[in-house]
Image (tube, rainbow, N blue to C red):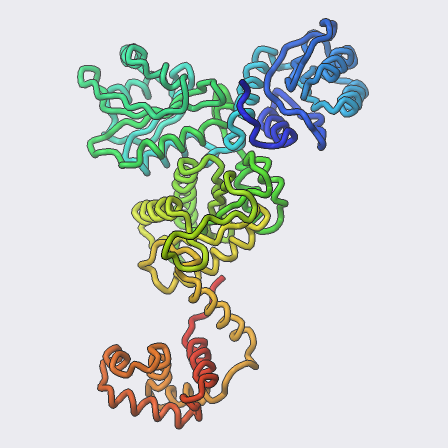
Length: 561
């Protein structure tokens, strides 16, 4: 039974086309109104008897150029979704095939003369399986490089990481120093897992479990073979095992979330092995670019939705992360820290939710967390006794706190994260991003605070916006308070600060006096003096409110974006 489709047919087709495009295959046509999904790969010849090709990518062998036209037509009439054919060097023949494919509603892929059909078939089956069963990882990669991914995972878990392909050849690994055990050392030197240890793994059924489904498997230590305890997860595309990611325990215990992080890293490694079956390389990070474009309102939501395998009406939560790196620090060091943080966040996000995507914009990191289970405008029922306004999902809030704690530990800077109100639709993500930015601006006044939701700082955010509007309107102010501030500057007094604290505390004289370390009578004298010099009538609620806003605005630091 075929797994249910999680994205429109056209989106699945575009996922597959993007993943297949490369030196072997050129995408010549993708119908914008495609209606058929893509679920299998079939090999056919132009003169085969007519047969069903339901939702298949047909590899049309045995002919090239216009000689393949008959087979292309038969595939289209048989219900195929796409056809791959050697087009030949004649541009007119290519145009004939393209027109025929367009009339039949087929996607057309041109296969290079240098490509072997068995090579094309292997890549095509892997890509189709990945897009059909896991569209969210079809365009995913951590930093576009397996070595970067391995090092990020090692940093997060405290272990020693290696990545192997399906033939147990070592493709990438983290730095290990003196923490590597004998099996790890032999694997790196020989570029493959030692045969003796492979035999132990097979006998224990490790690979059978990895082939059976997505699972993190613990492998006990084997002192006789020089092997410490390990965890392993499969790099999967559909039901195919493309490779494995390993974490070897060093002298120190692994992080408590190692299994979860390993699972996230294995998902991020999928596309690197799909698009580069022999030797991994770098990916353009299209998902991250589209996410940044959406947040900056340069890219329509449908473009990112297609890459994530979700609908554009999917409710999405936006997290903003400010690394709070030291301004004026060495430029390369800042960039290195930001890249390191992006890798950490990407692994955590993939572990938390398959469709989560991490991107950067204006020096900040953002995580988009779609919730396919919630339709547009969906809101969870409030918990008993909960305050009004947005309450972040408890699991998401806990995850964000753990993420920020990890970033602070590894970066050594007071990282802060903001959880915006959920965007009813993916297209509302730019508004949510602005909300996250406002929360982060307010949080900047309290470096000890790690995470905040809109509900937790709602009043502070609204007040910050009001003060910002006042600052942008210099004609809207109370000259009486300006005169009082000028008196403080000339005489070295603290009447403005005393009056502000008095208004903030709702007139609680003893509390304010204690905070200022003065006698209550001294405070009362200051308040009477402030009222006399400014002319503010503190018995008038309107004048009290204006005075409070004016004093807050004068004390507020310059507003950062």
